[in-house]
View 1 (tube, rainbow, N blue to C red):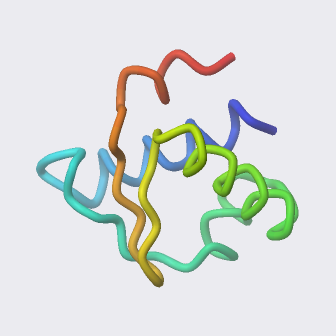
View 2 (cartoon, helix red, strand yellow):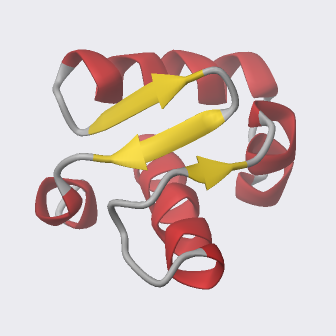
Length: 74
């Protein structure tokens, strides 16, 4: 689940933005359905990423803070 969440965030950052540090504007439930996991689980995992300083969350915006650590999650 952790890897799926990280990969989904990275995939959207790649497709939607020119730069990874630009915020991703998409709902949590849409991201969760793309990842193939429950919305609650996805949000919980994202909260952990936020606590670890990997991402920043403001409303519907998700900004990647540490792309290398996010890419290296197993």
